[in-house]
Image 1 (tube, protein in one colour):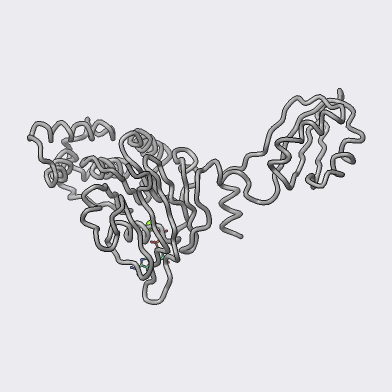
Image 2 (cartoon, rainbow, N blue to C red):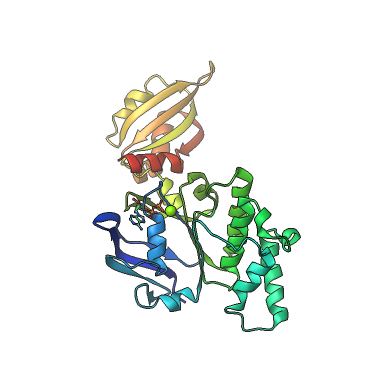
Length: 315
Ligand code: ADP
Ligand code: MG
């Protein structure tokens, strides 16, 4: 089984001379919940439309399940589910009717099996109790959940969701995120969003797009590690601190030491900025022990996606 579900190579789209996507190289692995993050106008929807063959690239290309996105779109579409950014439904139908209608296009089993699948999907998105009412009265969140059910009903190997949580209230967003988490056991999910918080909650991998360009990609853990040359270690110590700052700063891999007194009894918080992260992981504690300090807490400073995002987008 291949592990790379989506792979693009210099995927590029220009609309009438205006560049919307530049040389995108993206890799999405099986069973990830891949967050495609970027502000409005970054090129997220453009990328998604290119992937599923709704528009053609100006240059570059890509593969999904090993099929070419330009020439083998039909094979790709047979195995994916897609939720557009602004899904629209026939308002006079009920949720159950919409799902039955969609399912009928591909379902080869009996009517009974089809009905079972429809109910299963309605249950997954918590619409069973409203299933037979017309969609007209549905809230935005309910419509979005129905859209996810619709995209998922044919057992897709890849689910592509364009801003599934946009313009929902916090509860509506949470509902969508938890549905996505449940679906991860069955499929790979590639979804776009401009909401950082959501990415941090459900995604394992992320790509950050800004003005048509990829500015970071990888497991969230790696992106959250401060990618700058400097890392800060926060250490709580007890002991005589008088010479510590002077001694530490002599090390060429330590660039700054910030000392905060925590109590009268000799508790201190040290913020130690290092230039060599790996070296510090191995040697910083020993250095501190050599200075006769008792170490109460030792922690590498983690960064929130928000910080990293702002840095990347501004930089
Ligand atoms: P996102 O989904 O990240 O908000 P889009 O992919 O929709 O961004 O848009 C990226 C850029 O491409 C924007 O500047 C947008 O105005 C432009 N764009 C998108 N679709 C078209 C189109 N059909 N014609 C011209 N420009 C477009
Ligand atoms: Mg969009």
